[in-house]
Amino acid sequence: MTEDAQARAARLRAQAEEGIATADRRQNAREWAEKQVAAVRGTAASEHGDVRATVDHSGLLLRLELSPLTKQAKQDDLAHAITAVVRQATADARNQVREVYVRLQNEGVIRALPPFLLPAPETGAVTLALPVRGNSPSKRAGDHAEEGPPDSWLKEEPW
Image 1: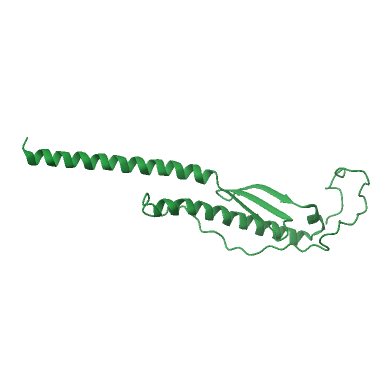
Image 2 (image 1 turned 90 degrees about the horizontal axis):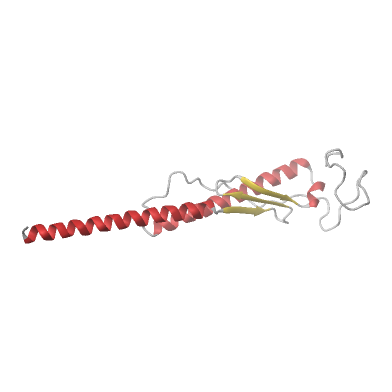
């Protein structure tokens, strides 16, 4: 082999090794991103914390918490508050997922953001109108004096 052929072979080996290292780095980054995204939890709450929601990385509702005061709210108001809080939690999750991929893009591991990334939905502050905040709810007909949940919340009159 001539010296030129040996030099060219060495360059090709170096390029191949560099390509393999780059591919390994990208594969490791993808695996890291998948783990990070799978761990994402988006959370949100109404202004006074009466409605709280937690969603996974895709926006699937995992947990919905309602304070006892929400029993005093009008059904339409409560439904609107729940929907808005879940929407905020979804926006939080989508923003966290986007941050994972933006980090990889900024480090040069990926060239462009994946096309499956959805934009965060528009959100605003969520306020749930309750009759009187801070006071304990008044007793309704049919409430029992003993502690514990009522026999059935479904049998009582609607809110």
